[in-house]
Figure (cartoon, rainbow, N blue to C red):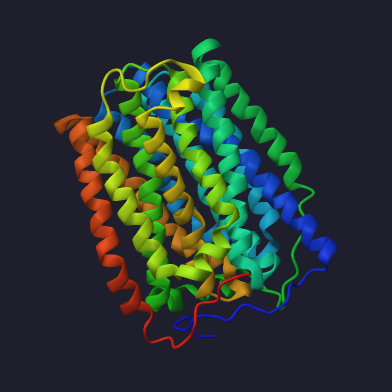
Length: 423
């Protein structure tokens, strides 16, 4: 099969209705559990690094370090998913999550934080590849709806993570907060063992066969489009870690308040994921990218205008109902569109049998943004301050939005196929 053409998903599920429901619920549960830990780390890593006295440039390197080695593992994770099944990749992902959290929990130096972040990055790289591949293969005709609802279950986990991590760190200390993530990883390890294996139309005999589509994907303009969209979605996620969390802390807010305000943003992501399939079927992928990125650019420009030392008001849940809380809600809502949108683009232009490698390939673009964006914005923040860095971020998102209609049309115009949008 040539990867210069978009692939029509199968009309029917490969599973019985009962088996499909079981697989769907379990992968949603795996995503929910994993993202409690992931949401916690997105709050704890920058706050813990600032607590230890590292500056913004060092913080950028610490955050970026998690993606470096994960880049190399994405394709292997995809090949293992296609060869042996996504369940084994998830087991590895939860295991490295446990190792990374344990290392950071006992760390107080720059290089030990880098080591712990490396394990967390390996975990994320393999997790995204396996879960996106698995979710898109449960029922290919409903890939958009399944990926959107998977995004909602993950975001619910993120909400629990950011809310609880800030509270635990503030009241019990960072050591206990990292211990909770270790325990969550253990729960995920056990849950992955009962995840049903999905059937495949053809058996892949080895890694060489599983990795064979990669040269065609590299040459495919449509897969390049999927990769670019993964890069911008990853950028949106990373900006929250390198700029928003430190900025909220710089305004004088405690760990718990930062967690509450960041959690407000995730509420919007949960709701939008439930109806994602219907939204994208009405707007189309190209228009939805343009809308989401334009909105995120405007929100970034608004953050330094709205942010003052007293903007968050009273502590706790009341901190959500403030101008900054409203901005975070809008940010999370539009990021909730990008989260399931880029894997849907990858699924549109890849075959079901090699979906793991396809997700891994676009994941390279995601991982590249995880390295480039925090490192560069860490330097920007150290040189010009956090407030001015938001101006750079806003302009960057608006440029992404302006380029998206041109790029999407150009890179997909020769494929002569209508995008397959799930019911």
